[in-house]
Structure formats: structure tokens, C-alpha cells
Image (cartoon, rainbow, N blue to C red; front, side, top):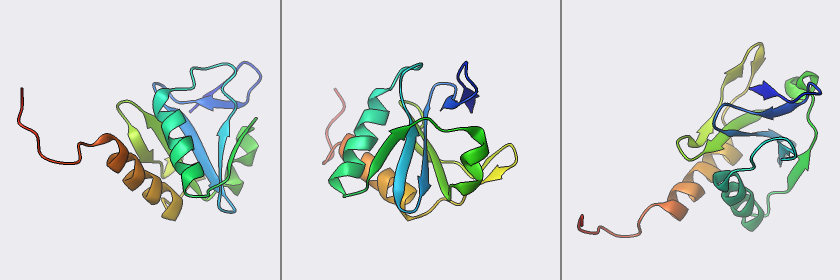
Length: 115
């Protein structure tokens, strides 16, 4: 996990980061890092499911209050995170649902012959 120049949670190397608290998805405001196409897709998928998405400044000392954490990116897709330094998270229903929704969104619907 990387912090911005003011010590706030920003992103991960090559991936964006999300947290869950009280059934809401929370992610840093993308004002000092690239927001990412996968990040935008996951936000849209969450909103379709009625999951509230809050983009805000997140301080490291808040991490104790989050129950779930996952990262998103072209390579990571949607990957749950169990631990960052001393903070522990449990992959749960929201992370798992968004993993399934993302896979369904980007995978071909049927078998296609290789070109």
C-alpha cells in the first residue's frame, strides 16, 4: 500500500485499493494517482448491486475499522487482501461478489475458437 505526499492512503503498486466498512465500499479519491479502468468498472458493478461507493481521503490509522480490503487492476483484476503490515482483513461477501461480477463482465460468454 502506498501513501500520497500528505500521508493518506493512495493506491498499491499497479493497483487501486478498496475497503469495506458497514456494507459500504470506500476507496481513496483519485486525485494524485491514476484511477484505473478496472477501478471504474468495479465502482460501476458495485453501484449496480446497490452497494454505496464512497470516494474519500483515507488515513492509515482508519484501517483498523475496515472489515474487508481488495485491490483492482489489469493484472490483479479483483484480488482480496488479508493483511497490510499490522492490519488484518477478512475477505467477505462484498469482495467475493465483486470478484464474481467482474469475472462475468470481462470473460467471454461462450467458447470461441482461437484466431
